[in-house]
Length: 102
Length: 332
Ligand code: SF4
Ligand code: SF4
Image (cartoon, chains in turn green, orange):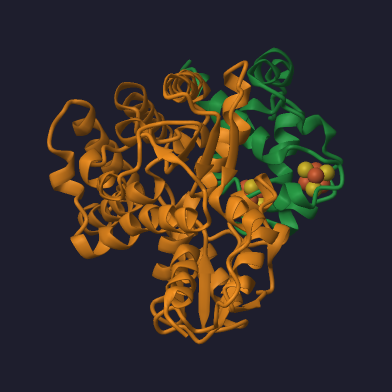
């Protein structure tokens, strides 16, 4: 079951900086152009973040930290999403919010 | 994966906070060229290397050592953590990661080459010597904003105390940190920051350059744009203009300018296999356009050369521009 965590986008990521994954319209151009072609970067990652899917973001830690921050995606994004800054903020969020053990 | 990442980012941050660099580079040797040139300390305009070219051979050496020693896919990064940890505690990190002189000399020559090019173009500038601090680019990329904010304050204070208003940088990562990132952390931020490529392009190289002046050059070069120069800082025309003025025929690869393809370098420490795959793909694109590739970033230089395995020549742009300069000074 997928748990949505609305606070991921609101108080948590927005507090870290100009997080704008919500502007993503899910066209997939970024993923088509990404040199890593991981199937996660960057469209799905932007979706997970925009929907507040905190656990999914955590599961994609490798994708978040392997991003080259090359901006190839961002240069071609029709919605002007600041993808690389979002990835950087997700790194920060992951570092500052380690998984809580039950 | 989670624990090592946190550990490593923490260690890099510690080093930046405590030592002003992610890795300690021997400062005296790294600034020797400026002393030899008699550059004054500080002043209205300074050349700022951010130690980027000087650090890269050490990072590269660490990666190779770990690839040999460590079996895990995280080997290189964990090794960096271990060595960085020793550095923080004051142990002999340099002995572990010291690159051979031949590995260092090419990278150490770049700041001196850039300084000579600027002098020849009539630019008056000083240097900060031990205050030429690493920009914190790697730490910023990892998301450690609080550490970078403090570091930005430190760099700004150094610039102010040395009466600096204009900063000339030599690599894309230092350029974007000092020009686009630090103003977010330091207000007011009243420093004008430009890459030496922009400064030289504005002044123009003297007429009379000829192709093929750089040792072994065919006179035709394929330009590999740095992602950071092209897409973060909009530096696309300046290198082409300079190479053309230097008498070289500029060839464009399949992905060029603002659509350039990454060298893979940013993934090198954590995911070397991914970095190598991206670099190999880029080398194929470059090879399809020519036999000599010109780079303008030390990370691109190291990664593309490694991936090229000798199939194409990969050199820094300053080498080509210096070659052209040497030719103009010779009697005709
Ligand atoms: S290119 Fe932009 S709008 Fe399209 S999926 Fe990627 S982030 Fe979303
Ligand atoms: S910045 Fe990251 S997500 Fe975007 S194209 Fe480059 S590697 Fe892919």
